[in-house]
Image 1 (cartoon, protein in one colour):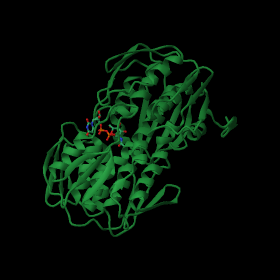
Image 2 (cartoon, rainbow, N blue to C red):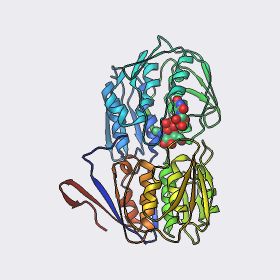
Image 3 (cartoon, rainbow, N blue to C red):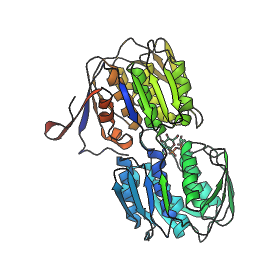
Image 4 (tube, rainbow, N blue to C red):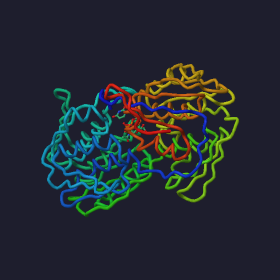
Length: 439
Ligand code: UD1
């Protein structure tokens, strides 16, 4: 998503306070986005998504659905109502798709519902080139013709037919796009080497609530038997956000705090918890949705390698690196999912971190302290990593490009402040600084 130049808000953080208290985890951005796209498949009823987070990305997906003819509105703070019955357009506009790559998720459902779909190619983004070839090959295997014209993907199919599809990488977005398209295809589709992320299971459960027939979600083989219509009215609660939860876990750990996470997806946090324990963080499972996280010193240097689920999530890589910047010893962080996810490193160095990048590996020599500095977020998770570093750095850290943070974390600094962090959002959009929150 590209920055909005009008958004000149910055976050000022006075570091050094251990975070203590309880925080409830909100719904998963990545799940809500794809469930919204899946709503395109419904022709006869309104769909209600509970536990939908209030984020900039969700607003963009709502605009994409509106541009297709759907009605979308929040009826309560976290309850989103989508009426897809009057969807009558087949084109997702360039302005929206370039703002957010996940807009591309409407390609499969739109094609399945309308027989054609025109969606702009998302292009590169801050964390890498991010092609969509796996999405397109899968749709072709189901009988679609695909053309690229004037920067748009144009997909057409009088009818989609089930197929055996081998993904050459377990892409989350491609698995989701193909599951949605296959739900209305004629016959059976088998996705091999499918992504196994928890959001895939959430999508399968949602589609099944609409009447789809899906087996195997969460494993590497997903079998979808196409149905004629998806019609049951759906009330569905979005799963909790494992990345938001993980970020709060590191906030507790890095500040030597003591935080209880409520409504957390405990099971889905396993690969992160293993690494945090290795780093000397105390994690206690209170029940299936409650975790207690206590930070201790020293933080121990711990190597991680990002991998598709159930491996260590790439969306937690930057936040983990911020913690390793303060570890006792040297750690190595290897990024295998995206090609360009070390953009935050230069900014962390400005705060005193010692990090060397070679290829896809960051070698981090832990330092006894970080010092507050003005820094710029370069993407969503980079923004989170800089806020985490600011929470523990000496003095004042000012994080700019907050727009990135707002893509994926609802009211983040307010919830940190409720745990004791000293944060203040300021706006410089009206020429002069204007405090939006207080310490
Ligand atoms: C989703 C998540 C993102 C997360 C990522 C990996 C959403 C909205 N976003 O992104 O937060 O970091 O999964 O867990 O759910 N690739 C191809 N060709 C394709 C598709 C992907 O080469 O057609 C490559 C990508 O360039 C990347 C890798 O596969 O290197 C993983 O991408 P993918 O799993 O598709 O991520 P997204 O679905 O875009």
